Amino acid sequence: MGKYNTVIELRNAPEIFKQLNSLNRQAEKAIDATVKDFKRRAPAWVSREVSAVYGIKKAEVTPTKKNTKAAGNVSVKGDTIATAALVYNGRVLTPTRFGMTPKAPKEAYTLKVQVKKGQRKTIGKVRRLTKKQRKNIGRNFQRQGSKSSNKSPIMLMHAGGGTYIPFQRRSKRRDDVHAIKTTSVPQMVDNELARKGIDTAIEENLSKRMEHHMGRYMGK
Image (cartoon, rainbow, N blue to C red; front, side, top):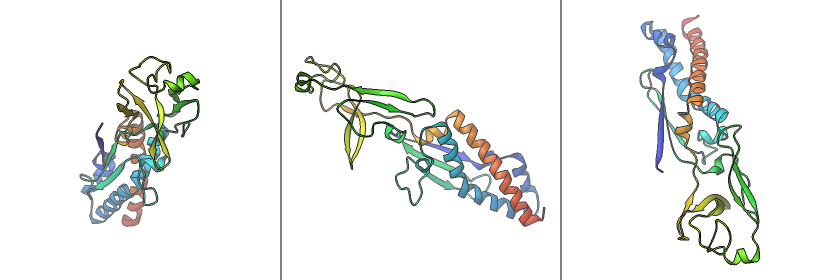
């Protein structure tokens, strides 16, 4: 799967915010300051709403200087109400981003993950093997017996750097191994429930910032 992207535009802000365009120069200063607040603060608002719906940490939704291993990238563009926007890009993520347990393989284990909050699911089970089954493990992953099988159970495999990622063999070829994927940051941002929370958070927080700047520049 390739990369995904989505855009959150400021021009969808409250109508009262747009009406300031028709006011005087002091109002323009208040608008400019509020647009800057959107560009600086909105990524944190988005992260909070996404993590309220999905089992991913807020710090992993939006990259920071301290966190260079975020799940996606966000770029900020534009300097006016009409052009200001947050652009999210990112690849489809593995279950390791969503509280996957266990994080490393054991002799026998059940892989569980919580992509959405409150919906913890089992994605794979690996059973303890007998001597005979160990001998035939390269021939049959599914039943762990002596016959050939097209698929393996989903199991953890080393991915370098001390990390393990869920993989599955999907044919009789031992090199036909695929990483298990879930969703991407842009897709999470576009989720109906998350997007509703994001729109509400932006409207409420920008209204507060607008009121603050109007008082600062217009004495109201």
